[in-house]
Every structure is written in C-alpha cells, then in structure tokens.
Image (cartoon, rainbow, N blue to C red; front, side):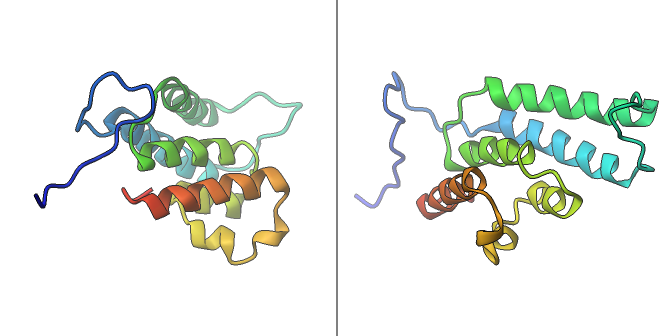
Length: 136
C-alpha cells in the first residue's frame, strides 16, 4: 500500500499520531535552564544556598524534569529524552552536561569505556532508540 505506519506501544488502547510535544517542550526548558546555570558564577557547594539566579534555573530544571518524568513517551525521541534526563543525574561534570544538553551521543561513545556501567546501559538504550528512528 505504500503507507507509513507506527507500531503502538504494548498495552496501548488507541493509536495516536501525536508526538511527545510535552516532553520535547520540557526538555527545551530544561536544556536552556541548564545552559544558563552552567554560565553562572560558581557558588554551588553543600554549605551554601543557591543564589537567586541559580535557584531560578534550578526551579525551571526541576519542573521540566518532573514533567518529563510524569509523561509516558510514545516515540523513540520522547523515550530518549527521558533517558538523557536520567543521564544528567548520573554524569554531572560540565563537559558531560554540555553534551547531554545537546543530546550528543557521539561525544559519549567516542570513549564509552570511561563511564560506569549504569551510564553505558543508558547510552546503549539511546543508541537502540536512534536505530528505531524518530530522531531519538
């Protein structure tokens, strides 16, 4: 027939062509706030409260991550964003965070052995989602 089709996730009760707009929007907010946060003067240490500027960005990231967590992804890209979000809580140095913000899988895979097993499992899942399509 020549028509494209998408498999519904297991347990789905209806087929939708809606993308993961809420997840994508939340990821956009999270990524921007993270990038802004990383450019602020460093004062993030356990004995200090966040500066007002830091707190503003952290609040945006927290709300966005909550939305990403609460959503059920229906596309490989949405599921990949959930994995990238999880990865941001495992790998937290500035270089890793910058790569996470732009979903730079190649950056992580160029020397994958430097990461612990949980990170490598997440990277494998992201790689699998990309293989499925949908710009994961």
